Amino acid sequence: MFDFMRGPSPQSLSAAVRHALEKGGLLPATGAPPALSVVESRGRYAGRTVRHIRVFDPARTSERGLTIRTYRDLSAHPDLVLRTGHVEADGMVVMHDRAPAVAAAIPVRERADRTANHGDERFVFPETFRAEGRLG
Image (cartoon, rainbow, N blue to C red; front, top):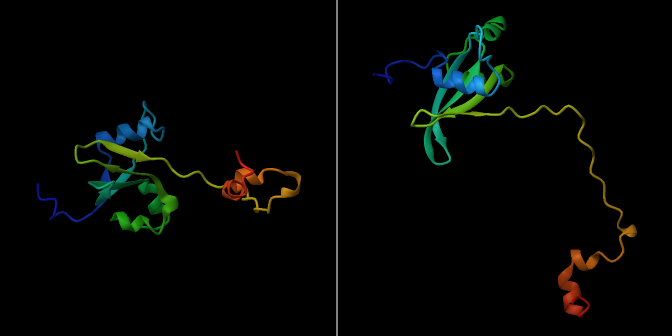
């Protein structure tokens, strides 16, 4: 009732967040799920007021000697965040996919060899060919 009086602190997963995590494959649909926690921060998403959430494993944070009390506490430790998402005003939970890790080196860009591609200038620079009357 008096949310403004309660200090920010990790909470256990709500049924809606638990369901979203099960649907996303982070939690098993059956069996004993791991004890995960969630921290929230009020904010905006696509012009709407939402509650941003971060899901983490408190066992992993305590192993590192960290005490997570607020959403911002995990900003310095993104590797401990299992999932992020937001909760809409109507209670709908939207989980964001984690960005895939870059496993391979990113190739260096090289300048293209255009000597083997004669005749493509009319597609690349059509305004030049129109001005010269060579483009139909």
